[in-house]
Image 1 (spheres, rainbow, N blue to C red):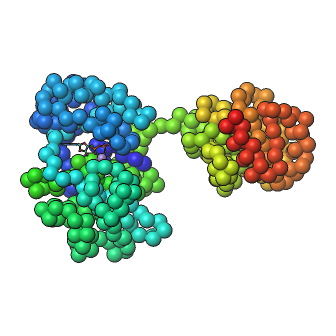
Image 2: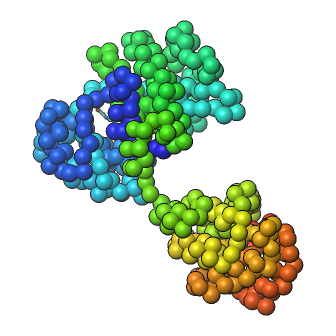
Length: 380
Ligand code: GDP
Ligand code: MN
């Protein structure tokens, strides 16, 4: 669950991390009123679930009400990497002496929390990691031990920040670690973390991702869940009771069983393509379920071919084959379909499908050959 910047700042503020005074709105008049209240200069910031807003014109400084109005109306409705700005955050502008980077994430392979701190902030950390990896000071924290004050100070020293920033940074990192752990976050990032000319250290941006599975322990997270970007495909699929996750590729995938569905997504990548979705139709593969699945996939304009991968178990091959044929009568499908049918009574099922095969309905013997065929068709 990714938080918008202003939600991340509210989350930070509850843990005592200093952020600028500001408010969120979707309305230009309100934006000016907020600016008047916090006092000029202010920064008007697009609230979208993507970074790089500054470069895209989504972060603007306003010296007075007139400028605040202009920026607010320009930023609302702006498209940033395909995300339309519906909300802006107006905050009191800060004077910046230096921009740093700070974050905590989980390092799964090390089974530890990873803290990263760099004197080169304000730019994407991936860029720093590529061009100047030594500029990132890392610390691996054993979750049972936590971040001790001594370890935190050693870490901050290794980052070579301005000495003026040391105390403030230690304090913020300690609070950020608490927020990250107690808040069940997968990521807590401040970029930039700024040193002001007055010597204070302050979070100027917030990127927070909370563990969606932790909602039951944090009822207040429901407010963040409500503003997650919605995938229309997922909503349509979930309404039909299907286990569906939208992905970025062009091969629509239908499989029975979560494990097989995941392998199918993988084998499509292995064949050089990309799955448009993960879709598990469960144990049964009757006409109703299959028609529902085909309908959802068919409505996705990114889908250029469909790969149906079924391993018959309790549901026998002939039932699956009849289900597919019946579903195809009910839904008019645009993309060509490649079927791989295996398992219980697979040959009986294939026998039923064979007379119907043409350039819109194909069959392959193995999962890999079916994946390759689907990828070829998607790219044709
Ligand atoms: P991002 O581009 O989406 O990461 O948005 P940020 O919130 O990180 O803002 C981008 C950049 O705008 C920062 O790195 C700062 O250089 C600048 N910026 C943001 N807020 C302020 C501010 O209050 N004062 C000044 N001087 N610059 C700011
Ligand atoms: Mn940023």
